[in-house]
Image 1: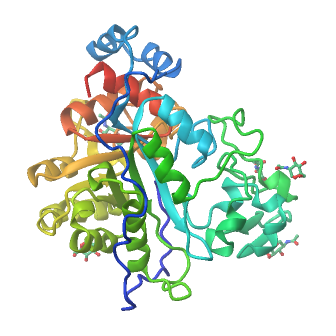
Image 2: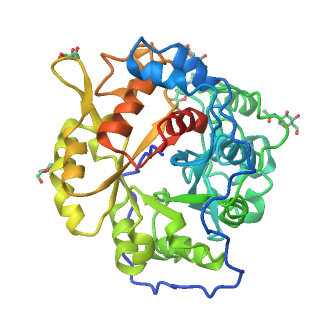
Length: 417
Ligand SMILES: *[C@@H]1O[C@H](CO)[C@@H](O)[C@H](O)[C@H]1NC(C)=O
Ligand SMILES: *[C@@H]1O[C@H](CO)[C@@H](O)[C@H](O)[C@H]1NC(C)=O
Ligand SMILES: *[C@@H]1O[C@H](CO)[C@@H](O)[C@H](O)[C@H]1NC(C)=O
Ligand SMILES: *[C@@H]1O[C@H](CO)[C@@H](O)[C@H](O)[C@H]1NC(C)=O
Ligand SMILES: *[C@@H]1O[C@H](CO)[C@@H](O)[C@H](O)[C@H]1NC(C)=O
């Protein structure tokens, strides 16, 4: 979810015609509410481990009291890129794990290929560190080929979905996100999984997903969708492809498969994408999720907070900053809702938070980025649930993205969310 916006990116303001609704060519999806009775959700051992690790508190007691209950799918739980704490992101195997862990909503981050087909990748140019492309003949098509570490300059490469066609994309295999900047060979470069993740589920060839794979798959599970239009890392229009057409094409895919807009949460970091959907596809626009990274600096945070009433007036319904921005520590050392969260509440905006279980050990720097405003009171992994409880009960978030959906599913079921 965290995006790194390239400042040179130009929004496609060209006025090339946007092709709107594709006729319905596929029978309508099920989409008539969940019927998960026969599906055995499994949260595994991690939530129990985290609850055991909590400091004594009424919340810990409450969570312990739910240990033997049956777990069900929850729409409070948004799978973030599948289940990338342990499975290669945006792969069939990762989405399958997310479903088993009880995520009600499955995410596909959307990028486009050279032939302008939509695929699920966290960023347009991450193939060199999320797939095996550098170890294939397609490596020669990368925007920047692999260059080894030479003693001073780190190893580099840059491989984009827009460097290759959909057919070529489909020959690649997913891998755990990461790279080794000290590598002297491409194979060593690919070996960079962080200490708190694992390569255990990366053997074989984890299957990459196109949007045409993703939509029917999630429909067959009778789950819901969240699809993020990733900020292009190439200049738009790309070979005549405008930003608006890209935004429209994503909506058209859901029309093509007959998916009800109420089952879809589109997201973008680019306000113009959100406004485009509000203005042109209002059924999708009213559930569009405004990903807000203005909060990443203190001045930006203040500006973002001040802009909330205006965004509400513009038709935005859901704000989604990194979850650190929704809480703070008060004078007594308690974690409480932030000014930003209070501003959203006051303006009647819903909030969705990202991303849980993405930080490694909280004993290292209190958890880092995602715990930025509370990190001097977070120091053990059990504190994750303390923060989630404030987000759910006091901030009132509608959902949380998680890299390991089971952790959020356990909480959601315990509290009837
Ligand atoms: C390593 O590469 C960098 C960047 O290309 C270059 O400036 C530097 O001189 C190189 N160092 C060696 C030891 O080759
Ligand atoms: C990479 O090399 C630098 C300096 O040569 C070293 O400090 C660092 O620990 C190395 N990193 C890894 C991951 O090996
Ligand atoms: C690279 O490709 C070779 C040949 O297919 C294979 O044996 C090897 O395991 C691959 N390495 C990685 C890191 O994918
Ligand atoms: C905050 O808003 C002010 C006034 O509109 C603007 O001048 C400033 O650049 C903004 N700062 C950030 C970090 O967005
Ligand atoms: C957290 O750390 C900051 C900076 O050191 C300090 O100003 C603040 O009082 C601390 N808050 C708590 C609750 O300890």
